[in-house]
Image (cartoon, rainbow, N blue to C red; front, side, top):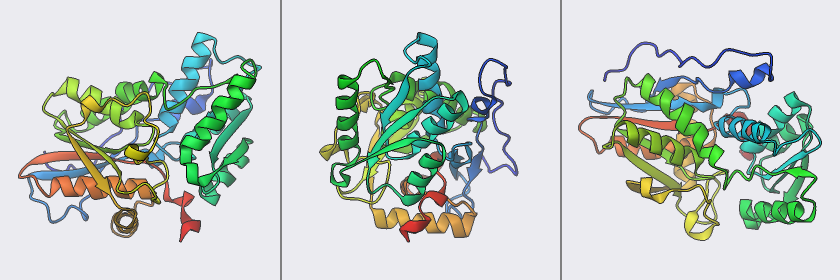
Amino acid sequence: MPYPDTLSPVPEAPKTDSRPALLDQIGATPLLPLRRIGAHLPDTVTLWAKAEHLNPGGSVKDRPARQMIEAGLASGAYQPHHTLIDATSGNTGIAYAMIAAALNRDVVLALPENASAERKAILRAYGAELILTDPMEGTDGAQAYVRREVEAHPDRYFYPDQYNNDANWQAHYTHTAREIIDQTDGAVTHFVAGLGTTGTFTGVSRRLKEHNASVTCVAMQPDTPLHGLEGLKHLPTAEVPGIYDDTLVDTHATCSTEDATAMTARLAQEEGLLVGPSAGANVTTALRIAETLDSGHVVTILCDTGTRYLSDD
């Protein structure tokens, strides 16, 4: 499939009076061709990036946050007196805080102390209370804190538990994957996603394989336990999320922080896309896959906006 001049976003449901209009602005992100970064590829190979940094909360995590909150509201698990609590590396927390503010609900978020200054500032701007946990324990330490707090005060909180909540991957199965299928006219051959909560990889891959069993799904993670790719997990040394389905993985891949950072700079300077390091890792991996192909359509995810990492330089 050649690159078209334009790609229209997939329509979302219309706004309703029964919930914040903000929720209907999540999703329907464009699928962008990376023409300059993929300029050396054969004409029969295309490289695409789903611009999830254009969601209202600035990341792909807007989708599962909305789905988990709406599932909690629908089931009655999330009541007006509850404070939403969860562990986060930052992006899901920002989405929680944004949506909870629109719902006039309180939020407590545990995240590693070394999360970027911008993420912490954004969370506080939305009114979230932050619990900063040991950076050496990563999000696993944040999860442990939240579990202890919920066990001690079960009636106080709504705990979505993004790492083990099926609504996380279902958001991507229902929406993200459908958009990718529609926007590629069903021609996607490869999908690349980094592993954090694993919701994006699991949900999109499951739906793509139902669409076409021959789609190759590539699971990427950092190449070492100590890395600078916020939001991604080195699964051999981390707590594996309960929603992760490794049977969907056709190819495992790793990416270094250095390669991801270099690609992040290229995306900004060559494609005009200011995104974060995890997006750089996704594109690095997707490009490596594309370079091995004689033909194919490789899709990956631009996870979040790069404005959250400017103080890292």
